[in-house]
Length: 131
Image (cartoon, rainbow, N blue to C red; front, side):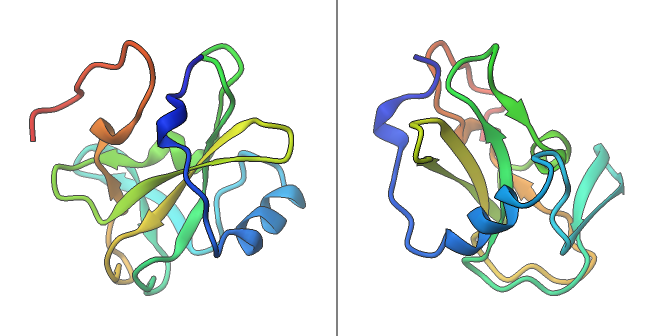
C-alpha cells in the first residue's frame, strides 16, 4: 500500500471542497490560488486573504505511486520548514486516498502557500529536508 493507513483522518468541513472537485477537472487550480514565480521557481499564491483552517483544495488522489494523480495545487506548492498549510488525508467513497491542503494560519493575499514535504506519509518515504 502506498499511503500509510494511520494517516487517514476524518474531516468535518470537506463536503464543499469535495463537491467542487467532483464538478471540475481534477487538475484545475482552486479559484482562490494562482501560480506565479517564487524564490523556489514556481509556486502557489493566495489571490485573496485565506482564513486559518480553510481547505485549499485537492492536491493528490490515488492509492499507489502508479495511480496517484497530482493536481496543479499539488504540483506547484513548495516546501518550507515553517509552512502555512498542512496535508489532510481522507478516503473517498470508493476507498481512494485523497490528500487536501488546509491552511494552518491566516494567509494574506499575495502570500505563497507552503507545506512541509516531510508530512507526506508513504512506505519507503525519506525526509525531504531537515527541519
